[in-house]
Length: 509
Image (cartoon, rainbow, N blue to C red; front, side):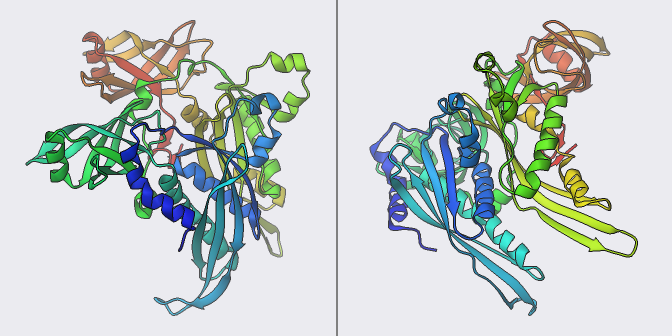
């Protein structure tokens, strides 16, 4: 698929522009996704917004959420760009499957995405996106599949437009004169992500090899494995050449099987006020009008039940006096965006069966900067023999809000003392957070220790049992021997929230 001339020129020059400029801006861009027009605009906007959050490269605001924010919060957020899109066409047809010979619904979604200057609204770049999907029996499912695969082109475009640049600092591991592991001067302060890929160039702009993120160690330090040109990179580094890097799009199948993991940077560089009780403003769900009410009801109920933060709805906030609003410091914003919800009613002689299937995106952002703290796409399904309303309620009721909060606002602390031990194994420990923090009884925390090179390794797990002033008592669930040894030998340790999940959050408990 052809891109516009502007984007083609941009991509061709991306690999060489850094050779002329050694000052890089790799910060995560904050973007307003303003509007989408054309056929199926609401659903296309949902799938595109979902794709933007999946790239982990952007702080993204849906224009519908942003426009409902109080002016005082809008003043805090500075946008680097405004995105708009037009759905050019959505052709859907039946054709014979090459492999099976069966007739299959085939759908294609063509979209023009434009990036505009937030001050002048001038178009900076325009590009064509394409998504394709199919389904043997259902035309709507084929259309939904086409819209959902727009994220592949989106990821490629974002990685190409917002290029991350830097330098190789050191070759850390090599074998037979071939570089295997290197350290680069880009880290958590940029929009880098796990398994991100880079091309490596010399000062003249000649490509020498390829590397891929292995572990983010700090704000400006990341370990990468060499995936191409290992002998050339080794020779160039030994010769004292400057080795420059520029990000390149992640392949579709690599993206498909990427599991986000906690990095040393997250453990090593906590936010100074991370442990306080945050106050968040809940914005009503936007998107699919059928689902919004049920998402709002569920979210407000769970927000009022959680002990992890204070929450206030936008309606309640707007009803406060100016003096009352000024007395509240809003730290975070929760913005749900609902997508493709489908309903079905099956009638029988005895009763009707109502079914709801859908998906929505949860976004938690920092109210002071617009930074996305956590974003998650959720598929949901509900069934009822009472009513469609009950089916909707059941489709969203099991959302694990505490998991999302634990990811967005993790606790950071350390072991103060080992209070009980047996056979050189810690059984009960005290940690350095207590009342006036967002810790709660039963909370799971992971224990890490740091080696001489600044690397953090997981050694155990504790569970909060009793919360006191300035400290909490925890039962050691795993790693008692390692925790005891680290404490006895004064090895630096850190404790970080462990969300109750399996396989990196793919299956939340």
